[in-house]
Length: 153
Image (cartoon, rainbow, N blue to C red):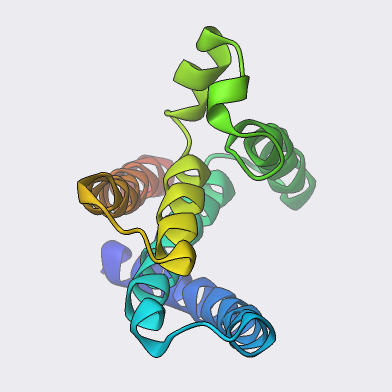
């Protein structure tokens, strides 16, 4: 079925992201001598983040006709997301309108949850960040399925 095919493609992307993310997490753990109890929330964040970004990739890939269009659309989403989501500049330093825009992007929640996990400060907000990542995954996967189904009909 169509959702199963998209899920298979998404799992491939997710596994690639997990391998890269786990390698970075191992390096950070060793380099900063992190306590082992911080790893569980960091791994959960990594898992949900890769799911959300894989679903975003699936959505982008079915929303266009040609490969070069997918690359262009992905970059159009990816580059602003990197600069708006707290990777380089904390959200509270952004103008209010950009803070609202950042809340519409999955990377914001990934950055917040990973930061809380690695600093050892998980809170109720962390649970909301993880729920938001799961929500993005479901929404983007559903949209990708709908678009692909319409395209094939």
